[in-house]
Image 1 (tube, rainbow, N blue to C red):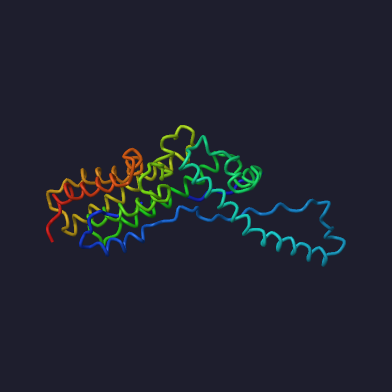
Image 2: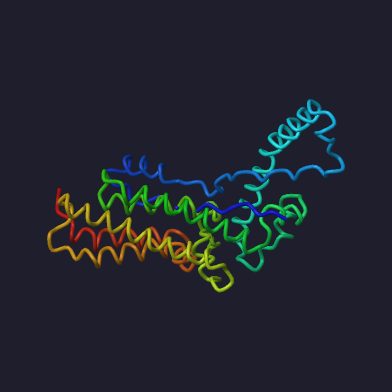
Length: 279
């Protein structure tokens, strides 16, 4: 049995720059679909079914070329199934956690057999590890798009962060009034003891990358004169990074996204406004 190789969320008040923020926020909506992977090759035919290449070289060459054509034509189907398995696994992991996400449940959702899943990923830990790595990589990319943008102020970035997380939240809470889990990172941090070392490292890497991106944003705001000279930058970085890193859990505990939005806006008005130079 072969295993595929690994690689690596509306404000109530309408600010004056609403159009700019909304336009920017649209860039931050990332798809949670897994990144396509290279397909696994179809096993070669049994030696007994393969004509001898020595008895008829030209015939053997033709059949060999047909083998390659068959493998090439089946590659997209294998890649599509590989991605479909990861997509369903991600949704189930977010909704139900590690223990309730089984090969049997995934197979039932896709109308396939568990043998098919084993063929692509080997075992459950390998599948979960692949899903976690892809999800974290996408989440980091989305966050960096916000916090590394040198054209927006910190206030605008907070609004963009709200929009980014609201989009993710509503995928699993379309009514906007429920508290279903919506972040794979927030969900699996609660079950880290059953994950592989690489999966845990990927989750920890999200925190490290977010801290670095927000540190860059604060330093840039300081150099550009957006922040006052007496701004306690280290404290500001710590608070912002902690907020971004725990928004999914806060939304679930609060019972909805409105409290998250209110909290982030309060932080912006009380903390950021205190240390932001007037324009």
